[in-house]
Image 1 (cartoon, rainbow, N blue to C red):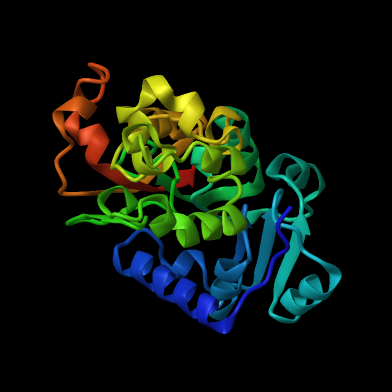
Image 2 (cartoon, rainbow, N blue to C red):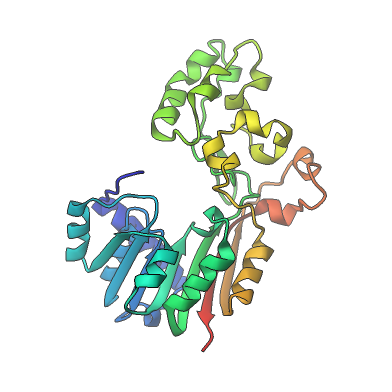
Length: 297
């Protein structure tokens, strides 16, 4: 379990992101100022602090994975944030007040039982309360959450790995990057992955394969070997489509008020489109899905 810490720079960045959502009409000041906000699976709680600074009367920050030690909880309390290591199901059974806004940033792609989770969200909201969700679509170029290898942008795909397969020194050229991955992202790059690096056969190397856009789709047949169990095979990404996500909102009783889908302009190569007939360019280029929904009375 990761222990939470947060810097002023991180909080400032989250404030800027909230300001952007306000400008886009995905959030409104009326749903924040003087209101009760729940930051669901809050991570380091930087968004929660940012909501407090934007005028929320009370902010609850819950996370079932990132650990809050007592000192950090005390620091957050002074910033008008109540932090708890608890799931939304557990929180729904002990909460003493309803929320005006529930905020979920890159949470929903990780949950296997979204219908139950959405029912908990519905029950925690006041009538006419808002639920904001930012969902990282599995099917875009780096949708497998291989953030140490590939980063999706609107106009390009950024390769973060060292292109050792093009260099005379081969594996040695990427050693530092691989060591950093194993240390900082053990759920993405493991010693087992590292042992498969073979300078005589780069085409079969998991480091090379995962440095390619849409690797999780392009190399699906070799998925179990090249992707660590903890992130993908273990089920921490649910792989639902944007349509399925939208439908879950409706089935849970929410009225969708605003929806925004960001896309990359990069065209998926033929081998990605050919992986399965249901993989359309629109699905493969859809990056983030942001939905603001309102609880019906």
